[in-house]
Image 1: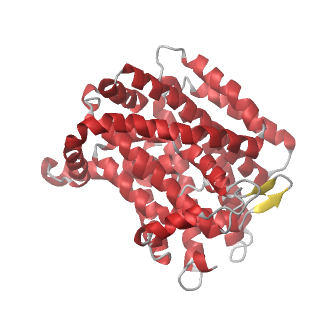
Image 2: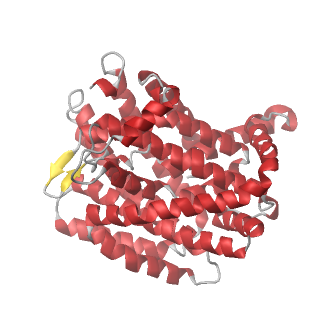
Image 3: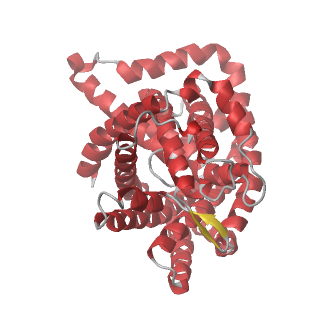
Length: 434
């Protein structure tokens, strides 16, 4: 699996995602970069009234991206790819904004309406996009994505989340944390979309404000060291000094690999998962919700992941051989005190809980595209709750390897679909005029 990931997520995925981002960004004329104030105004007027509000859908999408990805994902990227991985995380996020826009745009445009409101996602627009050109292959491709999405919801969206949450408090038996989270996950998951979006709408803004405040509490007193940290990031991203460039080139590829894959793990741009939440929104247009997708990437990676990276790089945690959530919590505790570190640890559990129920809802929609049998839904819920408990005691190695593979396969299928649609669209794709 390591060999497959080395080529798939180490070479193919970074260039596929960045290339797709450049092409789709050109189709949009990079309006979100050239006209940021206009984009913000568009976000502000996205609501239409009634149903699930656009910002409530955004909160659910952010629940699937914020938290463990920002804390554990960034720490893992720095440990495996060096400080330079942060730079490639930024680059992949900036380029992936256009990818996120289009996947959200298409999710809203191709969604379905049921008795309980709107629903949709990548598995639906993949079927619709390929239905005319490849009518026999379209259901198979949509079904493949749905299976990957279900697998991802159990693995990346559940096991990894709870594993990180359990690691936040090593003195407490992980099974106790896993069972406690599972006890709260079950009623929310059985409530489906509206109950889940209600929970995330209540939790995510509060947790985001707290984590931002805790990060600034560490960064502000060390503001004079930020140029030094930036230099370390840039040097790690491009340095070719080691062994005449051989080892340096290898380290750059590791930085690109882990910066890109952990960036995808954090903001989910290109992987096709968060459009499932956006598809529920009662929005003015697909374009308006697509702009909220851009904001989702900005908030997740450019804002929160950067704060986490600065907090970690300002500490001496990497020199002590720490990794994962332990490294992040050490960075906060050593610089802001044990109380702040404890509170961040509690926020990890709450973030993980929000992500788990959000990802379960994604898996449920994917399952709905395959079968409408109630028994299949309840079996999936029981599997997810069981994974919450088992995930708390799993080892990190095989877990991250499997997650990288599933995310890379999802991203490859989704981005190729988006490219196919954009290439076959007539003229410049300016969704604002559609």
